[in-house]
Every structure is written in C-alpha cells, then in structure tokens.
View 1 (tube, rainbow over the protein chains, first blue to last red):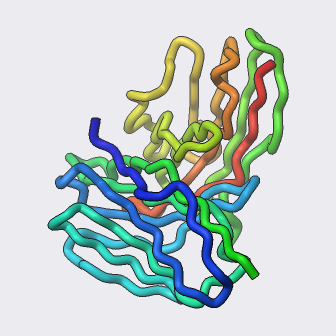
View 2 (cartoon, each protein chain N blue to C red):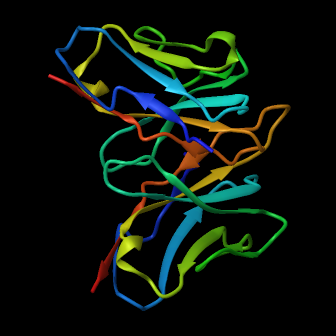
Length: 115
Length: 112
C-alpha cells in the first residue's frame, strides 16, 4: 500500500558534523510533508514542514529538501549536537475535500550523536 | 503557550479490563487527534475531531475503542475490553493551522 518510509533505520554521526535523514514517499498526490523529532518517553516534536510547491525550506539549523520527481524528502541538521539524538519521523499529508487530511508516518530513523 | 496535556502518563492493566485516557489540547485548537504508536513504529491515526464532531474514525477499532470530545475541548479515549495487542503509547495531538499538529507526551499502556 502507499506509505511513507525511510531509507535507514539508524544513523550515527559525530558531534559537530552535519546529519542527513532521508525519507521516501509513494503517494504523488501528497502535498504537505512534515518532520518530527521524538525523544525517548516524549511525544513527537514539530521540527519543520514543507508544502509541495516548494523544494527547500530552512529553519534554525535544519533544512528540508523535497524532490517531487523521485518522491524523496530529506532533513539536514547542521552542526549536530548530542541533544539532537532522537528518532526522526517524516509524515505526509494530502488535502482532500474539506478535511485537513491526516498525517501518515513512516517508521522513523534513530539518530545517535557521538561526542 | 501551554502544550497538549495528557493523563495518565502510564497505565498497566490486565487484559479484558477497561481503560480511559484524557487529553486537553492547546487552547484554541479546533482539531484534535488520537494516535496509537506501537514500539518501533510511527504513530497511526485512530480518530480525528473537528470541534466536537468526528472527521475521521476509519481506523478506530470500534468494537472496543471509543472516543468523545465534549464541548469541543477535552477528549477521552476508552478501550473496553483491552487486548494484549493494545499495548502501545497513545498520543493526542491538536492543530490550529491546517495540518501542523502538536503532540502531547502520550500515555504508555501496558496490557498484561
């Protein structure tokens, strides 16, 4: 079925390096994408979102890239810090009718930052 | 601004017992969601409310799960009777702007 997935279940990076977390989506009708960070024992925390009419969006230390041609989404974290260690989820959404639509989550990538 | 509040944070019950979770969304957020997150997986939507009306409950196991949102603010999710496979974290989220959802800390349910 259609779902959002991630290329790698785990990612280990050195403190100070840049991190890139990838996500593949299969539904070409999806027009909104969002990244969440989930620390152990906590709920998902909003990081950044992007609409399908954009291919790049930047936040504080984070950048999301969207490639609709290959249905690929990535989250780049600059100067990764130990506090960035968490599971990262991408989610997709498509607007339909009068509803806001529902987020469909992938399984997540666990980011570990080595000091 | 206060975030989404949930209680209890943890619950352990025996199978076939009933359990209820409570959620208070961010003030002013008209849309409220309940998700189930099984260990190692992403959250899966159970039900979506717009004010006090149900927008989508297509993935809610209605033979045992029920939810309500009285007065369009707080919400409760109930499981009766619980099964072993219901062990999961139950997350509540709310949104104001379209689609950007903010999550609460979740309730971790263990069914023995």
